[in-house]
Image 1 (cartoon, rainbow, N blue to C red):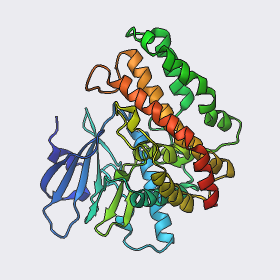
Image 2 (spheres, helix red, strand yellow; image 1 turned 90 degrees about the horizontal axis):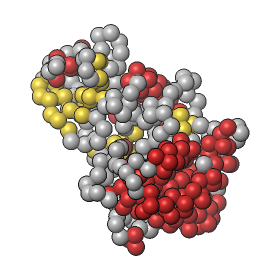
Image 3 (cartoon, rainbow, N blue to C red; image 1 turned 90 degrees about the vertical axis):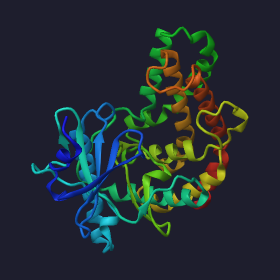
Image 4 (cartoon, helix red, strand yellow; image 1 turned 180 degrees about the horizontal axis):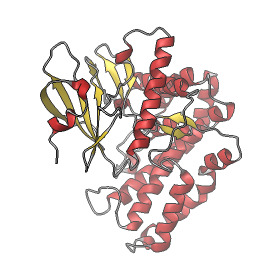
Length: 360
């Protein structure tokens, strides 16, 4: 196995390395900060790509290169200043690729953006900024000429997730169906409605956009004054419905409790967070959104807790083979919590629709 120094040496731009510091943030990829010896030179981020999750690293990096190049060109045309702090830049190897395979693992290097920070706190203020930035991110990529692939195929495909649940139910591998049959029946009642996006896409009524597909406050960099610099963690950037960016943010940010809260009475949908995020998002994305996409934004808010409930339930029925669990019934508790959030979001749909109409 090659040492970190040997791996960094494959990216000639980096130059002489002073110190390599492991960073703990990020659940999927191993990440390090590479400090260079030259105080005038920039520092770098070294990442080991998890190719169990992202099986086609060539495609992954193709997507990221296309996206960052296009955003950089847009920023230049807009005469933006300090562009290197407003879009990520990945460093090529001697062969000109933005990744290196050491025989076992895949590595990549991007320029570290100094005096930047990530935030974890979800407030109406931060949710508004996230909405603006992710809407802007999609708007900038609306005319991307290159074709991007799905880095995780069927990631947010509700029909595919229902198929996985039905297969789990048929096999009943862990003998848990007796316990969850009524819950499966409840989920099935709404399945046709919740799979609407895929049907509308096949009918040519709903487009796929280039979306981030992992919208959260911590996937943006801020400067020291709290201004948004750029969107980061671009691994899931791929063609999807805009519902991916809108609904997935509100699944976590709009929940008044953790996603595995056992006390269902604590789970409510936070309309203040919804209003702040929706306001920011529509401000920056309305330039390209179709009337149907805007009309279906409340559907997106229901879709993501519903989809997550389906995924947790399928895993529970299969015997907990996908998600890591902390106790025996963890996936069951997660399912109930996400299904309760779905029900809360469904109740809030008339209020969401009224608010979105007021923005237009």
